[in-house]
Image (cartoon, rainbow, N blue to C red):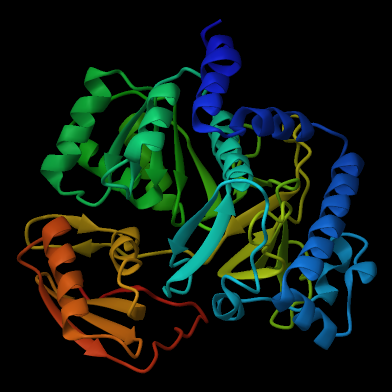
Length: 443
């Protein structure tokens, strides 16, 4: 009864107040994931045709790319034909923004800056409908983990100030939100106090932050029993999953999304190690270096096509991550969405500070994205109290820009950190072909 009240009355009322359509999209996604596989594929193909046509007709940057490749909307009949279109990275979209890559939609539009997998600031324009779809799938990923509407949940994140809309969302969803900027032992102890005092059955947040919370619980002999944990933002390593299980006695469910308004995949109570791919929200390809599909089970680059064009279409968008589609088709409790075997390209180290704080990679992204003259970065921990920070700068960069970054790291991380800055022309990829944002030289 409680879940029905939240689902059918309280949350729809919240949509009216926020002028969004989260619950309408949620019901659609929840229903469609149990359609026959053939119906899901046919609908995805229809949405692919529509978004490719919209991008070609409405955005000069796509039209020029497709004309140069001698391919057009008529050549794309569905997902299987997407490989015929050129791949699109952040640089051409950044150069075309906003006039040549955005569309009028008649809805409120919002700019978001994200560093994504490249570390470079990137602006995306999202309207209320795209945001509602993404938020609907955030609900669904948590429901897949066993949470139900009205269940209270503890969440970590990078927003220090939630704002009116997010605060409303927190109240409606019974979310107790805490910042992951500071994960020092006293702060983690306070978070554990909240979980125990309020008897919160679920936790969610960045994988590293929940791992550190679980590790602290075991170090201090705290053992709140939870029903489940939902992670995002960085790879859910096996050691993270095991630490959470041992500390809280609950399974952990990974999910994968990006800040450009796309929720991509999530584990469920039925999927085991696999992730359900949200096929009616995004067409996700795993391709080789030439943009061609790789065989199921093989590792490849993740390329995304968001299936609602919205205010800024993203078609064959390179996110810089690596993953694998499932080679097997296990039983998944009647959920017929495509399966992924894993996301392999988002492992991040943890920076330890003299005061005992532990800084995850999202901490630095949250600061660097507001330093527009810094276009790329890498943090190298030389010793417990020394960070060597390599930055790639734009032409307008000044020493004052760097000093503001230092002040933020000292204020939100640890004032005793010594920060060495080095301006470099570029930051090369690691031998694995991936960008390393955090490099720890500590034992």
